[in-house]
Length: 228
Image (cartoon, rainbow, N blue to C red):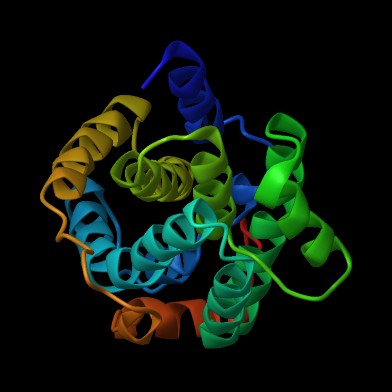
């Protein structure tokens, strides 16, 4: 990885990346409201479950496949994958949030990586022909930048974890230092994540039932800090 590629990865994984992710907890706020998550230990446990059962087999695998298609300039493959992922999002608020974040991410990335498949994909999204998630958008842009696949997927996983830890720091609340300690632990989860080699779009799945129910019930909370 050269300096330009490294600085690009740092930029898109920064908490200040302007895609609106800070406004969403993707069900965490519901888990806090119901008492399932109430301190650092319960948060880390719930985060690990979300990582294993939803982030890895859904967003992680989708990002891996998106890079494969983008690297091969298989635009039809990117579109099919994007349709599959967007239609698989069930909870109303989480779906709307994920697609809003994805659209904004791709818009910003198009300005950072102009031309090629990133620009083509943004034009399709802007025209309303297809949706995107942050992970797919990031993977497409990373492939355009010549960043290797494993690092692209790592960036997707890390940025998702970092965003949810930031939500936990504010909502539980836990201190910033504790949040960083949890994020350091989560980095080991990424390192130990399964290999996606040989996986296909048919393998994309999510079995984080508690999180998905929390995402569905978020709109019924009496008061909300987050949009999802």
